[in-house]
Image (cartoon, rainbow, N blue to C red; front, side, top):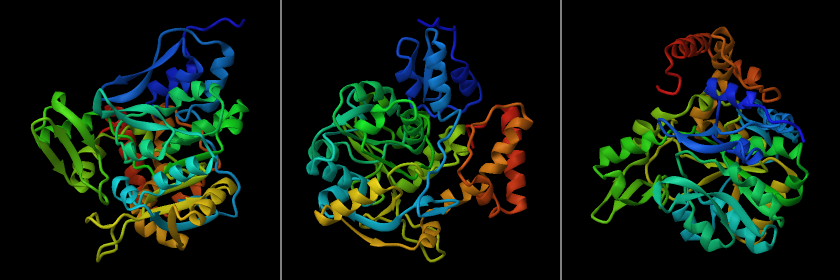
Length: 410
């Protein structure tokens, strides 16, 4: 038996450097020593309550997305911003209810329902609203289309799906995993050490991520809506339309806010620092990644006017292609090809962020701060698309915010 050290050096370094994504993997790898908690202003963070063995520390260091990001793997095509791809499409669930209830066009929900019904998997590990506090998230196992639909929709607050991965793997069977790009990176890193991942997780889905806001963003929304947090019995960040409104319901009243206001005026201002330097916010190591296939306005910028839902669908692996083909053949989803060049028109903020990752991360060693290893993600290639002025502003801005301690606030 190896002796346990007092603290995990990796977790300590990642926390001190504001590099934690809140994925929960460290808590799964060291359940007696680490647990996930909500830390001000409302991010999921590991709390170290005991020592870890050298072997456990090695596993954490090799998997934590705050320390190392899984490189993009081989595919017929790789784009410096949009990652490896086999097929790029726009599409939607063919079930009108799924398309309406879920985010975008319901592609992820439709694919999960098909994966369950076709026997590819027997369950799905993902997140769901917390029954005790609907503004927060809990980990969930869904085994039916009804459960998938009940838990559909984006959840823009802290989640730690990998805190449940050890038990999920121990349960055996075949499961689909749905998580943020950082969660998927951590799962792929874990697969390098744990053969059970390949055996029990035949399909991994992700999405283009705008960053994880703190729970404080929810408080800002509730204050604006005039709904006391303790009275909330249902809270939807979006969905039920596209993009769908943010809705808070209490026993006395229901109030809503547009997606443009909820995200643009509140949630986006609470995004944690690690997300602002994410080199793979597009789910580049998932089997399939989906996103909003926004329609452009007259100036070409995405319009958030309510429309019939439409998903951007990117397959990245043979497993992803097989699931898409099967779902298309079964009539679960509909899709049509999209030139890769069109993705930038639908997701301009993702393109801009990727161009600036090199400048932002270059500021960290200059201020004696750690940064994640992020080789094999085309960061330097994407940076060539940034103007010198924009790169300089982001370099200096990151230095300034680091020195002021305000990196997780706009």
